[in-house]
Length: 472
Image (cartoon, rainbow, N blue to C red):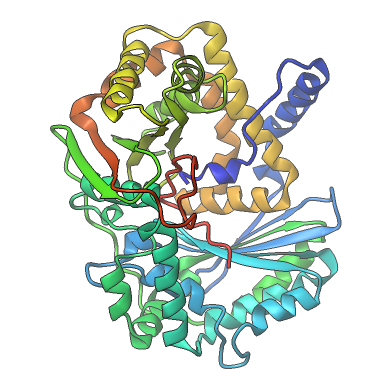
């Protein structure tokens, strides 16, 4: 998220009959096809609009996706996508700083935004009767971007980087490991950007960046909620239809060359406990067969307390505080599958790495059982299906898949998961989860953290690369 967040809760208590029956009903409903109910339009200025009626609750959500993230940045200007996200709340030609959020809140709504490697999403959840408010405000800041207080907002971002990365040993390790894994592709640098680049960004940089990427031709507006779809489509068309485009965004041509040997990095940092972060290059949705099999492999290895790594490293051998697996098949370009773990006191990193290698060898050498495979599918499917109950999650899924090619891909997810076989899982483990394709980061504590900021005692290692997830 990577963007596990889009699929919401992934834990499914399959042992209870009533929940199992509910899940089967929801799964059947999801298979009926969400996309069939979506109203789609492409306006003359290139803006794409998706509208979906959902009458489960008297609320509505509006998401505006821009196909711009750290992937679009260039050397020396890293972090500008995230800084622009901040500046979008700092006023337009019509509204002053923070007026956007104040107006949304006065109408009973909530708003936020986040930046990823691939895109930026601005969203509001509001009473169904006031959806016209965020529609007009979002159109205004697309057309009339005029932020105030640039230097103070840049200082906020720099402090955010200090807090979330430089003072957080686990995130600093993830950033260092990712930078070693990617040597050519823009995924090399973090979403928040390098500190020295952020320091050098100017208001003119932000205005120029906005003029290229924050245009109708580069955006998708998604509305989901308890409303009349035809009426909302007209409201969006009226608000956004007259906005002009700037120049066409340049294509991303950088390709990451194949990795032909293990890379290791060591981070010496104030920390309470050692940690490791291992990353393997992995395909994205464009290689669907392998990507869905890796989704299941990741589920078996590290999702939940019944996963292999949790049972082995956390419960049985008590070597680590936590063991997490992250894989984002919906990234725009091929990305990474991560395993991260934080040692318990007195445990050596080399011993955990050796045990991790043993578990990886098991999934490469032996097919997973039918029961384990089905449990992993149940977890994946349940997370996807339960997300359908949230208007925000529905809008997120539709917008993401439209950016990847078509919102109709949403309805292929469950069928693709169902197709994964034990042979597929073993095959992708053999192909991708090997040492020659791995970048291994090791955190060596140089002392106890001076305070709890960013890296609390016993806090798990969470790879946050790929999604800023900022709460403003």
